[in-house]
Amino acid sequence: MHRRLKIILIHVVVVGLMLIILAAKNYPTPHEKYRICGDRPLRPVRHRSTRMVGGVNVGVDVWPWQVSILYQPNSSAPLRQICGGAIVHEKWVMTAAACALEDKGKLLVRAGSNSLDVDDVSTQISEVSRSVVHKKFGPYSMRYNIALLEMKTPFVFDSYVLPICVPNENIAQYNFESCYITGYNAQPGDDVGMLQEAKVWLITRSLCNKPLFWNYTVSPDFICAGEFDGGINGCETNLGGPLSCYIKIFHSYFLIGFRVKATSCELPHQPNIYIKVHTYFFWIEKEMNVSLI
Image 1 (cartoon, rainbow, N blue to C red):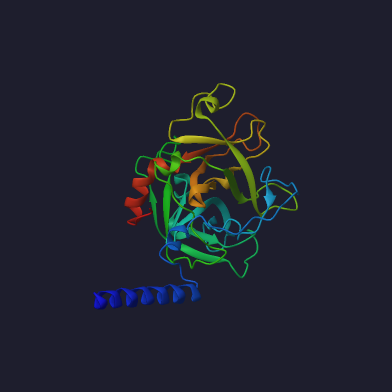
Image 2: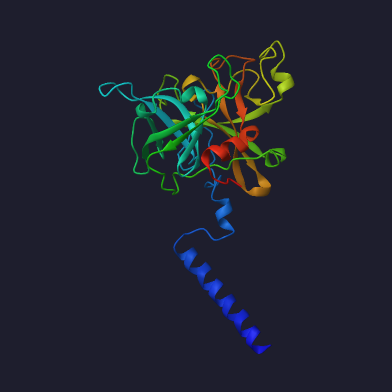
C-alpha cells in the first residue's frame, strides 16, 4: 500500500515539473494546445472609421491567421495580391478555389504583415508547394469553391502568425458571439493596402435569396454576411478572406466561412457570399491528412 502511494506521489511530482518546464518555455500544456487555434490578444477600442469597405485599420496581431495570396506572372512583373486566405495549420492555408487556379509556382503567401507594401519584422513569406482545388469546382459556379494551399516553408507560430480553428458540423451549431471580416484594403485613399477589419451580421439564406438581394442563387452551403445597405463589404481582391466568428464556450475564433463572391463591392442589397466551411470539414481533413479536432 505504501509503495503504491509512493509511486503515485512520484508521478504527480514528475507531471507537475513537466508542466512547469512547458510553461517556462512557452510551450502549450496538454489543455492549452487545443486552444492555440483561434486565439488572439484583446482588441483595442477603436472609433475611427475607414474603408475595406466599412473597415478600420488593425494590427495583424489582432487577426494572426489573415494572409495575402500574391501572384507574379513572370520574374519582371511586380507581385500583386489576388486573394486573401486563412492559416488553418502550420503548413496549410484555406482560400477560395478561384484563387488557386494560377500556376502554383507563381504564387506566394504572405502572413504576419500589417500592410501589403511593407514587410514587418513579423512578416513570413512562403512559396506554395501544392494547391488542392476541390474536384467538383467549376469556374462558372460558386459551388465547391474551396482550395487548400500547402506551404513550401511551414509557418512559425508566434503572436503575429497563428491558425484559426476549423469548425465541424457540431461546432457550427453553437451561437456566435460576434463575427468579423478582414482583408487588405483595396479602396483608393490613405489606407490602401492596410489590414482592416469590420464587424458584420450574418444574413439568413432565405433573406439573402430574395429577388431584391441575390435572387435565389445562394445554395445551402453558403451564407451571406455584411449590411443590408452595403456599407460593410469586402471587394474582389478580398476573395478568400476569412469570416471569423467567436464562440464563447471554446474561447476561440472559428473560420465559419470565407468570401467567394464580392463583385458587388459596397452595393446595397448584395452582401458578400461566404462558403460554409463546416460543410467541407471531412474533405479538408482528408486532403490535409491531419486531425483538426
